[in-house]
Image 1 (cartoon, one colour):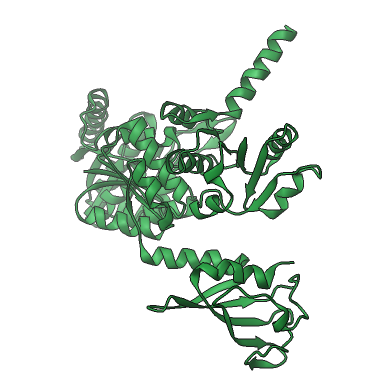
Image 2 (tube, chains in turn blue, green, purple; image 1 turned 135 degrees about the horizontal axis):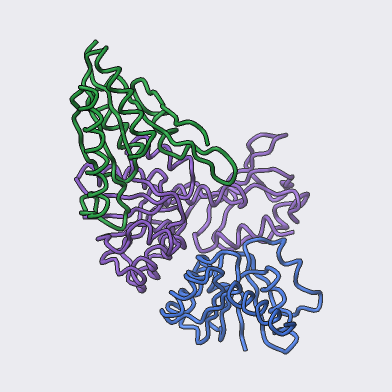
Length: 134
Length: 140
Length: 220
């Protein structure tokens, strides 16, 4: 699959590494060139420097051929905007959007975005861990 | 010296003392006294919303102040105001009417072990065009 | 009407002032404490400090009874989210966003947000965007013949440093018009002219070749 990941932070880079190792064609985009240091030497995909909310840049990064778009920057609103561009302008079949704020996440889930809130997921996992110890 | 003294009141001992002080002063200065109570209206409601319990309480606070005025042989004017924030409402009223003095009663309040002045008093101290006297109740 | 304005910068401030003068009830939501204070001092109790993209802030602002929400921050993504949250969580009848980057107008439109684009914003955004990090500055568009004049500054790590101009592959329809160097001043470049760090190159090119031209002079 052709996968574009916006945001080369810890999550974005690790996801890129995993998908790359499984043989997918991964393109990581970020506005900070220093962020690409997180990609391992073995990474065979591409890294593009630019703003993932910019439609021209997304075209340049190959979004028109992408099967999956993942928005994983630190900014909820940036992720939301980029994910909606990918979904509504470029009609990417699968778009995944990280939203830290659980309330905002709920709003966009009801609007049809596939969303993940690390806040909710993390809190739930910690609670489960506590209960297991119990 | 004529002129007007503005006493914003929220009810309670400190407010009563402020009204009494204003009466004493008004008699010697031949000033008028204007007593206001400001109801803070949340933004979820229009500014002119009719807030029954708050209105009733405001009326009680003002009639109590009127009674203190009568006991001190000092006629007072009262008004109930609605605003988004108390501080700016007091300052606006003082500016519009050109009052000479604002007298406010303040409680001795502690929050998390620290003395706290709230946000209305500092706002009035910072922005009021006229003199401001504070009348703090005894500690404890 | 009750109108909520998100963003208390210059645009938000003047917009609010105008709307108040027209007799509307207005509330500005602004993150920055100092901006809030300035607005409150000048316009009264019509400011709420907070993040206008957050549901809690919008609830406190009385978004439920707002007739209109106008988002005018300098960030398109924040304006978009504020409008969408207002529309879908609070059923605000009309939402309007300032679009800083005109390329974004289509996504706002698809998502049902009205937009306004200011040309001044556009130029400012462009300058801010180009100056600090990008070595290519757009100087002039020659209308009618489809050419533009740009300025390139040779970065320290560029591969063209110390090379002759004839050895640098230029994109088609691109001509170097002038080289301004610290040591020699302005000179008309010839094939043998050697480029140094910090030299400013004034070039004529087609808009579509601009990125290639930038790469030609800045790649490492």
